[in-house]
Length: 460
Image 1 (tube, rainbow, N blue to C red):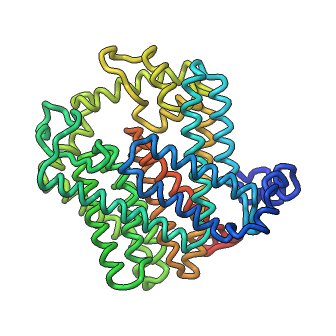
Image 2 (tube, one colour; image 1 turned 120 degrees about the vertical axis):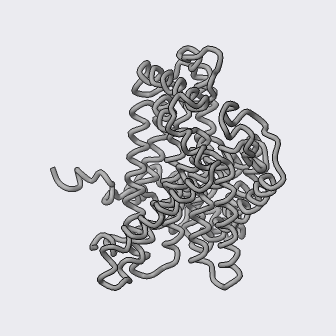
Image 3 (cartoon, helix red, strand yellow; image 1 turned 45 degrees about the horizontal axis):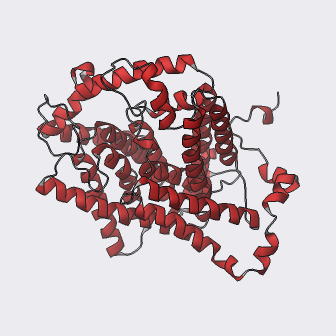
């Protein structure tokens, strides 16, 4: 079998060639005549960027229904833009895998034991994927990429200011978020405008790597100072959520981010520092994290609760949910029950371990994906992650070779994705619009950058 037949990373897949000669390609350009005659066409990227920016600005402050309306507006605009076509339009392997995942979700909905409920989840998934498509189209231009990330960072700063205010002056818990029998029962867990500390942690997680990247990307002393303030405020606010999943995500994002920075800077170091530079940096980072946790009793107590299994009520609840979810997966292993929490809520009671407490989700995005779209859909999702990782690695090589500061946004996006996936091991706030839109924004950053055939990292 030739290499092309074994190209799991889809590096040599010519989707643009297929599109240009297919009926679908001609359909997608059916409004090209309007493009050539309309004075509005020159403003299309700005309108698309404005719609994406509105979602980023309003997501932490508005109810889910309002966010859904904005996503619908963005989806409609993307469809108009796509039908009109553009000279620099391009399809890529990640687009194909995202489309394949959506197709599997459609099939899972059709075959779902609760198809009406699954249709609701399919609608939400479709809006998120179209948000990705619109954001990717806009962020093909470096200027718009930086603008949209700046919009998110400024919004996250406003959210963090409210979180710090709650930490200083106290905040009334809106639910029982901590085991009432633990030593942390009276500790303030901030939630800012999002109403839930775990959700706040998931929302702020991307802001930490992106704030660090902004220090390198933004020019001028005042913008860099602002980025440093953002890094401190956002990091502190995330820690004050006392979200254990958020902390795990922050640790993963930090480790991946520092590792990528090592890859970026190590070739510029003297020869004797190249071998030990990254290991020493990782060691110092680990010592700092361990020292910080050990020196603060509240942090130490919260981190320790991760390892007590059923000794913590939150852990015990999640373990019961995971046991039930495993049975749900075994009952429908290939295509699952269909997408969305509405379908989950209708099927889960048939399998729940503790009849006194129901669950809104699987409390693990990986288990949730297996429940919703089965092994087939989950495999496509993992394939997408693999292709995105390969694409980011090659793009980082070309950025490093040219010393393009856009490489810092790329490293931050990859670190964020690693952190969000780690957080998602023990929670499913990843499916809430405030967080889901940020996940697909990170994917859009990676996809919006086109790798060259050969890069500096390919040859290193």
